Length: 56
Image (tube, rainbow, N blue to C red; front, side, top):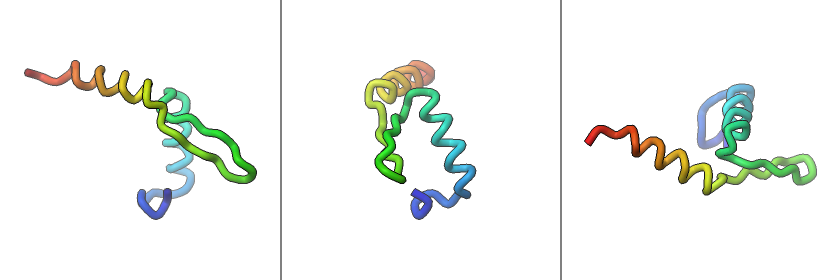
C-alpha cells in the first residue's frame, strides 16, 4: 500500500486501525501478512450518510 499512498508506515497503521475500529475495513491475518477487505455494508451506510449531508 505504501507505493500508492505516500505516508509513513506508522501513519498508515494508525489510519488502518481507525478504519478497522469503525468497521469500514476488516482484516484477517494470513501468516505474517494481514489481508484487508472493505466492508461493503458499512461503506454503503457511510455513503448514504454523506449523501444525506449534501445540500440540494
